Every structure is written in C-alpha cells, then in structure tokens.
Image (cartoon, rainbow, N blue to C red):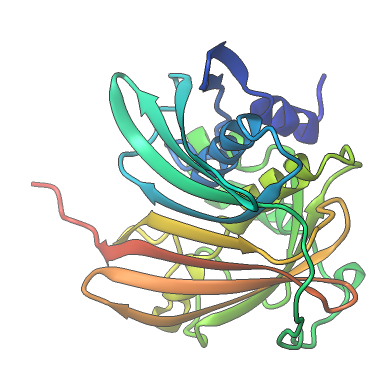
Length: 289
C-alpha cells in the first residue's frame, strides 16, 4: 500500500492530455470538497511544466471560484502569457464539469543576486516537544461523526504540530495568531518544483482557522461557514519541505463575512522562506427551514 506521501506525489504528477493541458486526481481529507491546497499545488505544477527555462516560481496569486468535486478529475489549462529575459508568467484555469472552479497566476524568475534582509523568526518550541496533530485527532475520533472518522484519522502526507493546539469541540477564545511546525512524512525528491508544490499544499492548511480563534470557533463549529476565497504565496528562498518548517500565522481582520490571514514560513535556522496571504468566507451558517 502506498504511503500518504506517495499518494500526494502521485497527485502532483499530473497527466498531460494535450499541449498546455493537464489532468489531476483528488484526495479526500474530510472537508466534503477538494482541499484548496491540493488545487493550488496542482495548478502550480501545471504552470511549471510549461516553463522551459531554469526558473522557479517566486509568486502565485489564486482565486477559489467553486467548490471542487472529489469524484471528478480536475483539468488544468495553462496560458503562456509571457516568456521574458528574467521572468516567465503563466495563467492556469482549473475546470470541472465544464466550469472554472479555480484560477491562478504564477510568475517564475531566474536566480539573480540583490540586497537581502528579513524579519526575525518568532521563538517556538522545537517540533520534538510537540504532539503531532494527527495523534490529537485520533484521540478524539469518537467525537467526530461516524462517516468522517476513517477519513479524518487516515495517514497524512505532512506532519503538522501546533504550538498551542485548539480543541476542535470546546474551543476557547484566543488571540488571532498561531505557530505550527510542519514537514513531509518522508524524503522528497530533490526537484525544487516538488518542494514548492508541497509547500503550496501545506500553506493552505490551518491559515483561516486563525481568523476564528478570537471568537472561540473552529472549522468544525456548526454555526459557522468557512471557505477559502483567494490565496497568495511568495517564495523568497529555496525550501526543503522534508525538513521542519515553522509556519507563523496571524489574522489582522475579520468583517463583512470575510476574514484575512497571513503567514510566514521559516526554516530551523530562522531564514524566511515564504510569505502567505489569504482571505476567506467566514459567515454564520444559514439555518435550514
């Protein structure tokens, strides 16, 4: 049986259908729809497949248009917008059932030198001192609906470890910030494309939950509806996602049924590797009847 990480790498190994057209499979993580990080990562891979120069992504900006259907493959159409002297620009549209569910713009840059500085990484306990999130979820398995238990407690491709974990069923109000370590559960190929895609995948995990913390809510709270609306990611330095990375998140604002969160990804030496920003739908659920 393939490991969860092998399954993730298989998801990222898109099937070429035609020139600039690719198809990807889905993996259910228990949300009832395709995980946004999966579509983000697959779209980035599709864009990178059309870049012929030795250039890696430095930024991407995406919009989630419709929920993804777990039962249908996703087809990615890539537009080659520009191939310049230093930068390459691509636009990707993800299609299901003849409709666009997601679009992404990505820019790729050749390696060059320039001035450097960065913000400092926040202090955090080492990953070995923290409990894997999956262990915490499995310990609470009986509290989840029976039809979700197997999916929510399945093996994961990435090991997430929260510094101050939130109780999914009895959350307490907390400041809109969180620290989380993560790394792939196994060795990844050296290909930078793979590490960028897995980092994109992980960057969508838990970010909007930060918006809910001041309100003593979680994504499992029945009175709230949460969904990603857009996502931006900037790659500052090469990253190895099979080594521990620290994800520092904060949510400066929530209003108008939308919440905004941003994050910074550091390696164990405190180097800033990537920056993330996301806005999501955060509204009270409509009552039925």
